[in-house]
Image 1 (cartoon, rainbow, N blue to C red):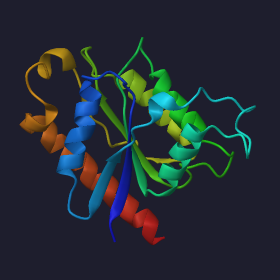
Image 2: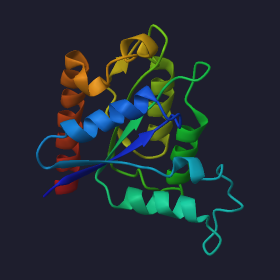
Image 3: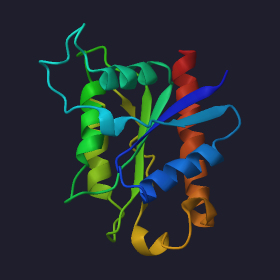
Length: 187
């Protein structure tokens, strides 16, 4: 049985280093693990309970929920915007937290990693994302962390997949998340 991981990237920028980290995880996924980068976060309207109604649910939100329903685990990639989680990532968490008690994260393992320009690599945003995921029902792997500082300089001429230190750390994250997803699916 293959473990399926859905990657949600909190940066919409074309040259996003967090997107590049996600691309690296696709290439580094261990045998028996498939990582899918979700492509539609920019299309999802801000969460509003008035439009989260059967029959009028926005198509982009429905597609996100369908994708979440097909996977065993989540890997979020978060930069840090003004000291916190980017709106696009928080919005995805909000949509997947519903319906209350039965959202897409319920009982599934999730980890948050990322990179940012600052000296701490976005740890504040990643901690906020972990908090929101836990409240939304995910089984957050609190000890699975990877915060790569100085992204603008570090990845100016090198894709993360070509950075040996980063690829070793990404491989460890994937191995742990995949193992947790396998255990959760077996229960």
